[in-house]
Every structure is written in structure tokens, then in C-alpha cells.
Image (tube, rainbow, N blue to C red; front, side, top):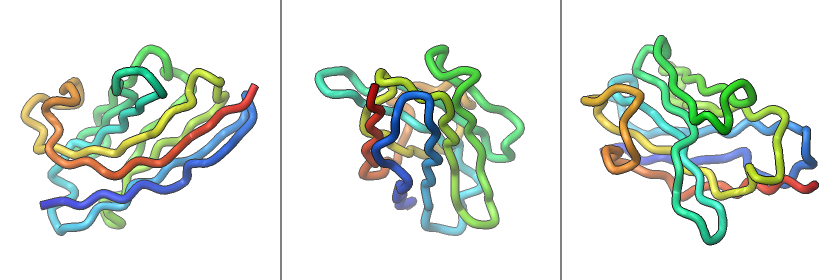
Length: 125
């Protein structure tokens, strides 16, 4: 069982930056592929980024590639999402998720077993 708690969301102007954190419980954190997803009002939840157990493999949605960076610190059971050059369309609730890694970093949201409660990111124009 893994429990995930996101933090770091907030209100930022377009062009600004935020760094999201996701703290995980449990001693097997390093075994999990970790992902970030987001859901904007009235829209389906969508994939943002994922990272494998070692951090050596990462995968991004086209909409955030070059602006967002996912990383992890297995010693601290934490995964991060550095978000730069934020746009109003990045406004959403951001969720951290974990799964056992059978499909690598290209897994869909339906493969993820554990989810956090989410943190709100609002980007003003």
C-alpha cells in the first residue's frame, strides 16, 4: 500500500514557475513508476509526466515537453514536478500517482494503482 500527498500548488502568473512535490509512504517507493496527471474543470484527467524507478527513463505529454521536468528522490520517498513557463491552460488539479511498472513510463492512467488527493495549480493571464 502506498499513500501519496501532493503539495506546492498555488496561484502564479503566466510565465512563472511552480514546483510540485509528492511525498509517498512505504518502504517500497523506489519500486514504483511515478506519474503526474492533471484535470482541468470540465475536462478529462490527462497524463502530464512519468518517471521510472531509477529516474533514468522519463516521459512527457507533448503539451508540457520542454517546460516541465519530473524527478524523484528515492531516499526521501518524493517525486517532483518542476513547472516553468506556465500558461493559463496549465490550470488544473494536479495528481500524483504510482504503479508497479509493468508497462514502464508509457502506461496510461488506468494502469496506476495509487493516487494522491491532488493540488490546485492556477495560472493567471
